[in-house]
Length: 382
Image (cartoon, rainbow, N blue to C red; front, side, top):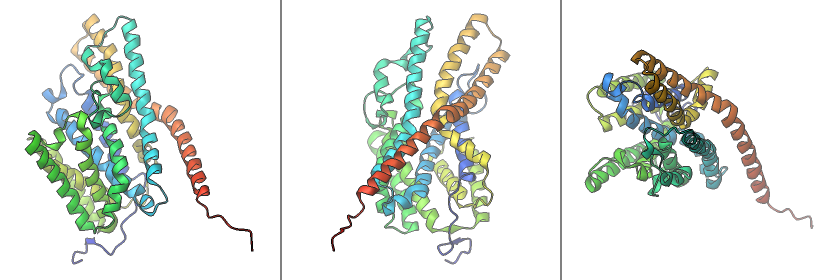
């Protein structure tokens, strides 16, 4: 190509742990906690500081879905494409990564509601703990039009939607690998714009405002876009200095436009550029601290809503009973945020990691047995 800063001839840097992508995962998970906790203080941060705290969920969910497609494509794309990791094994690997933690948090909430009810403490918003909403959420089917899933650990709708994306991953991969990098990038952007226009025309709202019950329709175009960005990143080398500047400018632009409104499409472009830039910057000295922080990011996502419900269930009772001043209420709020981080790290290292270690061992044995059955039979005759 004519530009020396962008080339299809140079080898692109591999994706590694402990780099910028891992740092972004932890930052986004931290912002998700702040977004979920922003309405639990004496005054909503969206009202007292900036409305971005309220609409941050839109931005962070988009980032989460695009980044999931990007990372999975770069980590598993080659092995799934050549068949060393089957579609079934890929799905099992991803499903078993998210479901045990989700189920534990869901059942933990059930226990919390039952115990607090037995003690005569009712939730402030009982409509968010209706029993008819629980089955779809526990089974992670709420993003596919199955009735239920509202309330409880509500953010898990995005995990439900990703389950569908995991199923689609091998088929999307098969199509993308037949295209060039620029065609793939254009297809990823174009598909999102088409789906967005369709929802506007048919439903009267953009695709990112799809109800949680149809979250899969919202998630798949963004997941596909992430996969397209990854395929582009694997084929097109971007100079690290250019990638760094693109990432900085995109992050500043994203922060700037939020002062005025949501600006969904502009924000989507900025998020895509940030992820693309982070993946293009080599990591000569990976950070173990960043790697560990990124590994905890899933636990931060899946546990923070449960911590918020439990923490402020107690805090609100104390505030009402003792008429605590605003300063103390803010102290309880800060302590709740700290508790969300602490619980996530504890859950990751004490519970989730041992479970995942056993699951990985079982999956390796399963894969080994399957490969053995596929070995050709060698005849001893002649």
